[in-house]
Length: 620
Image (cartoon, rainbow, N blue to C red; front, side, top):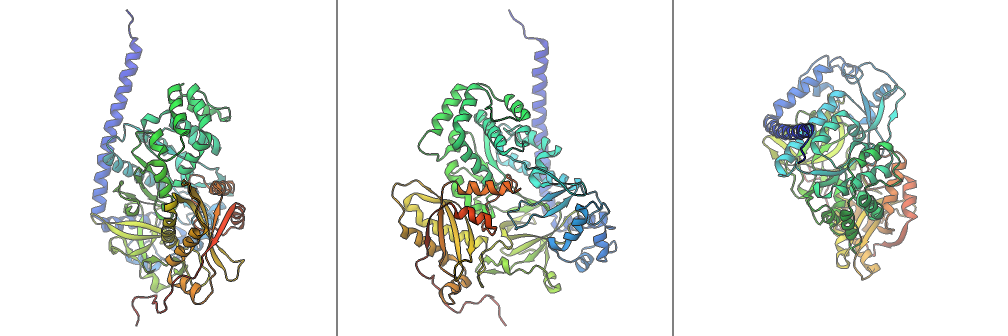
């Protein structure tokens, strides 16, 4: 009779003990996190006063605050009186000094540990945001709070795994020796993240998402996700573009992946030794699973492929607010309409808040700003027929405009505001550029819908078309394609100034599942529907002043937007943070899109327009 070695029994006991310890610790962290949220959302204004006083006390002797005459004051009234509301351009000379190696306390008393680059697809230029070790502590605190909310909402959270696609980009060194990298790269490479990764239990080992080679990273992460398909309870990526790209990667490479699953080996194209080693620790030969994957991937339709290959997946963890909402139909198609969960609201400048109602409809996502993350102010934003008039917001605010800013506790429900933030790491009354709408409250803390980024618009004359307006117009036009079982999978736009007068151009990539060809008249109706959905000044320019030409839709080849992302990534954009630009102005991008046009259509008539519209509700 064989006996079990004592060392093995000890190992099993130790493993069980650690598992139970982690489970109990997770429960405790969840409870503490939820209690913290309750406390800070009940005392919003007091917490905000304390946060501002802490920031100003810690940074009392920095050059920037002294230069504006704050003189060590930490009260809110003095701060608002002497410190101006600014944009990035206002502090760029200070940041340039930091970039070039000036280590004096210019903006912040704490050492600047690195510079975070913007993705390059939100505001047109890449900005370098100084950050500190303490700022990263706050970012990961927000992540832990988010995990507490997920633990409370998802019963099986902690008993399964997340197939969450993550990517890094290369780092750069500034002349002064600081590391400059994207926010997500910084997070993924941070030792803090290893602790978060263990608690989240991702299918992807660290080596796979820390691999700088995009193909090897994508392939290895997908292989690990497939090999653990029964354990996966959530799928996703930070932005839908990355996740959709992963599914399309699977469409293209499923046969190679199946071979690896079947044999328990890693394809020779994966040459990074650390990646191969990490994957081989997970991978075991599984012919039955390989047969299952092959059977699903060779079916006529890829509709619902996520729930077919990962049958225990309960939701898709992906940001679908703002311009990202254009990907909802594609995500619904691949996921069989699994809940789409947006968890966090954060940017390179600061982490802001979390979504407490995870399984709400995408259109109802509202973020509760956590008042300990920074000091928040809000600039009222005027709209046109409920649409944010983002382009008319001046870069420099007058003293009268600056006096309009309100505190977090004083915003009004239903009103739109531009977010202004003061951070521990040296941004003071900084205009982030995000437009938010007050949707409700968690205790005394306002909850906000993310509407759009400022100044991402199409404009020819007096017309100012922003993200929200264009999305609504696209949604209306897309309905014309439904009878043909067709949908717009991705789109972007630009103003064609080569024609007289100039006109709007929309590039559409389509998914057509129906057998009946779409007549040209339907696309022409789509053009007109978009124009009918645009603002008063656009329709005035088209129908009355003739300063705007007929809107044009250019249908592009399938795969065009993958090419667009490849090109942007080759220029230095982070794949993890890449977002398809709602409008393109960079000539090579326009040339790429135009080179793949298969057909084009124009609006057949002018949109309806009636004179007499008033821009302002109140006139004297």
